[in-house]
Length: 221
Image (cartoon, rainbow, N blue to C red; front, side):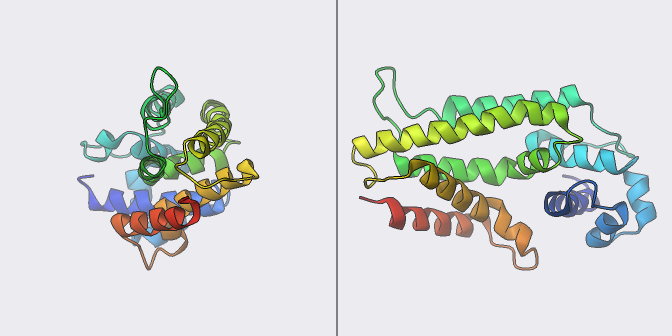
């Protein structure tokens, strides 16, 4: 993003919306966390709804972060947000979550899948979490996202069974619990650790190494 002030607002607003929810986050709180005056916030955005849609769109569409952005920023319309969300989710389904060839044979290593999921969450979780946590005011987006989230959980469970069959991971019971553990581990190190401890940010490559190391120690046969 060319504007360092907008970059700071993006990070702090995304964190506050994710932690506290839209209704419990005030423009004054975003301004304070971003180190700017409340008046400056309103010169950059027409309102809090514009800030939330900005955070979501800037997370989903990486080109937006480096574009010239006209101020004040207005709320981004739902069809544009949904289009960006579909593109991200379709790409994840077609590439990251595609682990078998045409004959049904496993062609993607388990730990390669974990690495790709880490990168996906690091890139897009800020938007996805905010969509879920603020579903009441982002109904169209949540209706698009949540069914695919539940489908992901089922798909990852099926993949764990395949990886057990081919001997890439140790034998497991209680598959649903492992799906949740893996997802929570990936999302914690990909993003949530830095949201929880913003004063001690962990570089992405360091967080990824820690995360994949934990998963390897837990699942290697």
